[in-house]
Every structure is written in C-alpha cells, then in structure tokens.
Image (cartoon, rainbow, N blue to C red; front, top):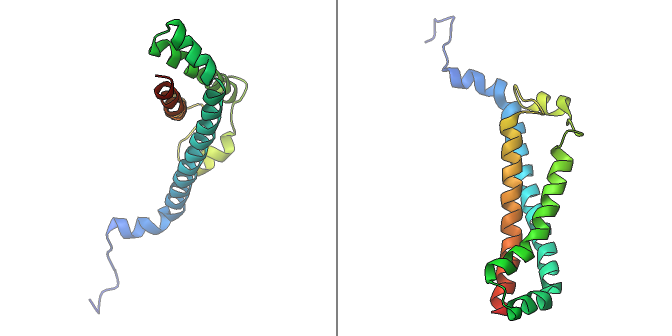
Length: 145
C-alpha cells in the first residue's frame, strides 16, 4: 500500500540474505567433497587394478591348485582393506584431533569429534574403497575363470 509505513515480508525472504554465506559454504563443501571422493575412487581403483594385474599369475595358480573364487577374491581384496583401515585409523585416530576452528566456523554446532560425522566418514570411505577394489578383483577373477 502507498500510505503504509510498515512492510511485511515472508520469513524466507528476510532470512535468505542472512543465510547466504552458510548456504554457499555448504554447497561448496559438498561439491569439493564429491570431487575429492571421485578423485580418491580413481586413485584407489588405479592402484587396485595395478596390484591385481601384477598378481594375476598368483591368483591363477591359486585357482589351479583348488582355491575357491571367494578365497581368491579375499586374497585380492585383503591388502587393500588392511591399507584402508590403517590410513583411516591414522587420519581419524586419537593422535589427530582435527582443526576445531575451521569446521566450527563453517558448520553450525559442528565439532571435530562428532561421532555421527566420524562414523559417516569412515563408512563412506570404506564403501568407496570396497567399490574401487571390488571391480578390478572381479575383472581378474573373470579372466582367470
């Protein structure tokens, strides 16, 4: 109205400007996290494919001797999981408390030792590692059989 001194707005419009930096930080961190996950999958996949290709004769001999495909798959994946577990323990273990200032300044009420976040990160990294090592091991198993 023309004679009104007070203008009413919906809450979402007034809060959207105040929450813009947090939204931008969240979107940026999500995009960077997804890119980092893709990069780690690519690296793990390459290393697993190389490792399995170098061990192809050994895995073939195991099958020829009478090992079951499940045992050969465990032999191909075992090293990768030990390696992933070692590095996850080293990065998230008790020696590395994280940087509380960085995470707490970006994400509201976040702590570097949040059990839900740490569990999610560990599970995500293990699942990504499983996926990246499973594919070369399955390929090698198909070649041998």
